[in-house]
Length: 131
Image 1 (cartoon, rainbow, N blue to C red):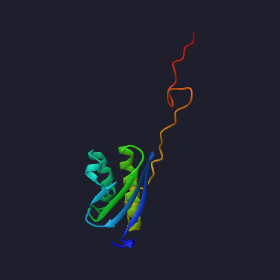
Image 2: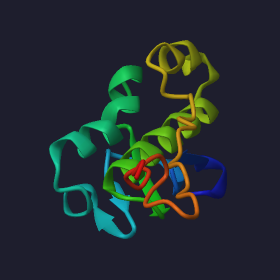
Image 3: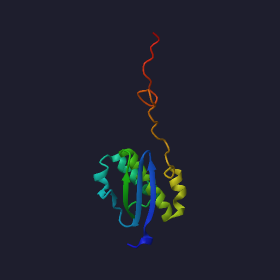
């Protein structure tokens, strides 16, 4: 496998960051040196990771090596999805309309709101007492 046959993409969601490496192969997906099924036991997370390939009809054509850190399982799954979609763009720019129609190229910028001082949470307030 030569260096020119690899395509890199970075995906992000909440505090999760996924570094994706795509290489021509037979559809193996490794996340943090573990198989997809071992890393994401929940079916919905695995479906999210596969979605860019399903949309572009490239399922089973590329081996995927992902290094992901930060966030929780859901954020990591969507970060992987985002990274794979961006890497597929480097493979073939003609896939852009398909990926864009499914909103797979959009970085979901929603983040957790910080806790405010003097209060129990971001929005929650201590009970108000008039007397």
